[in-house]
Image (cartoon, rainbow, N blue to C red; front, top):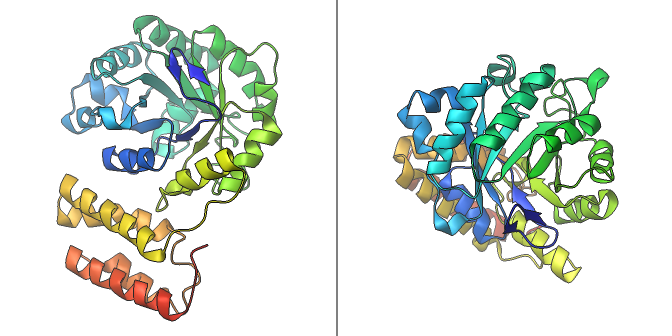
Length: 333
């Protein structure tokens, strides 16, 4: 699969943009495990053109995570164009337009998935941004605003005509948020539309290597994007890569290997922020990881883990978890 001149190889697997998740350390971690393309957290075009420092810091990308896309959102044409130009100066490989974020503070103001209620404006933004920068411009969106407006098949053609180089589609409407199951049938229709010439990347409910392989084979998508399934589990990319390349499940590593990955993530989070904020940030990953499933009477230990306030406290809990896992005679699943 190629986006512009960027060759991602056959059946690439992509890390989705996620606010408060896909910071630089996590992107590098997922790249290490086999992600073929990563995305930054969402970047507000309005904040970027006002030169808000915290927003500008999100533009920092490194050679170790390439290829990498910076994703921007907003509803004003001029602000999105100027933000795209500022992003280009940060030298990512791609610029992505977020027309899919469903959260109220973004979609409710007409940005993100809110653009699905104003298609003419969405197309104006897309066209003008594609004209304004030299980098490939891509779009991430959803099936439509609600069940009565699942317009992605026709919208995909319109976005392509605006000059984008690839399209990522989450298999839900904005009204669904993240509830229910992602519907990949319309993603498949977009991919199999003979008028579509650009790569189509599918997204939604891919939390295992087997699910990823099934999406490729059943719907024919060019790439698969992994979002929430990677939180607390960056090694998912290596499991997917193994299955796609070898045709067999990836043999599990020892429990200590995966626990050490979480330790590394925690240290990186603390180094990037500070001890208090770093531990608060990593709790989302610790709460989501499937690594601890199956440990008997784990709830009190889980509560203690998520309440730890220092590295010493948290790593002491990790040590006890490892002992519990071994004592129960469990295997990593």
